Image 1: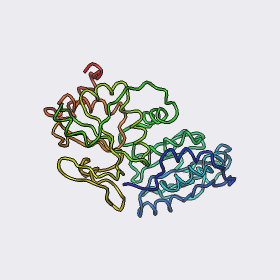
Image 2: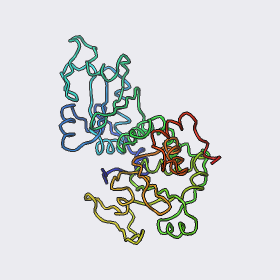
Image 3: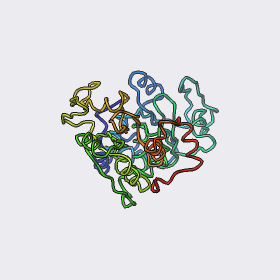
Image 4: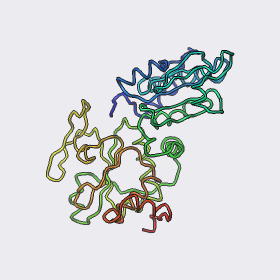
Length: 343
């Protein structure tokens, strides 16, 4: 679930300008065969990164000399992925996800059966296939990937952003969070856990608690772009008390008469209030929604884009959740989207 070795994005970016390795063949990535990667995945699950290349591809070699020779990127890949280097014209027989794939011809420069499975009719090199540890989801990119292009893809896969967002959507917000930061933002009123009980006595509202940690890159994207989105901010301020909570906080917190503190959870030091708020379904980021009595309504695991969060907040904030199933609500919402700035 959580892996301390995940470097925070600030460190991730700071390593981008380190001296590149001159190993043209492999770069600094620890490449595996399909067999090796799948065997390792049975013991410790990680997503796969498959570099699809050919011997005659100049841009493939350039990607090894640059992107995969960047120390920061290579360390991140080696820590969080099983990286496979796949010659699209190999004459080897390959077992992948329980099936056997063979070369289609003994002739040179003939695509392998597995290359066609990955690329279809668009046999372009280099191509990179990102695959989840259970083979449930894959993302194909084609062409040379420089540092700045591959970074959001790595985070998208490692932090399970694919479960809640398309890559194009996440990539847009990733850029707004770290590079194109001059976008229109709304102002959010931020409170603390300690203030909630007094606030509810004065003016009852629902509560949205954003639980994050410094090592969580998609948390940073969400904090910097989702809640300040101009289509969300006003509605959020009007209908919710918004709280940021650090999952690694060392503070002792009194919440609803009980004390919570930092302790080892699955051999990782985390604040135990995070599990309480997340209904024991914890992953990062997680949004915990409470009612006016500070009782849990729901916990939203993984990254939430503004587009994804907007109907959820309206569903809760308008009290539709009390009388209408989510499936019925979202069906109606998609037919007639609501302008939250008018609510």
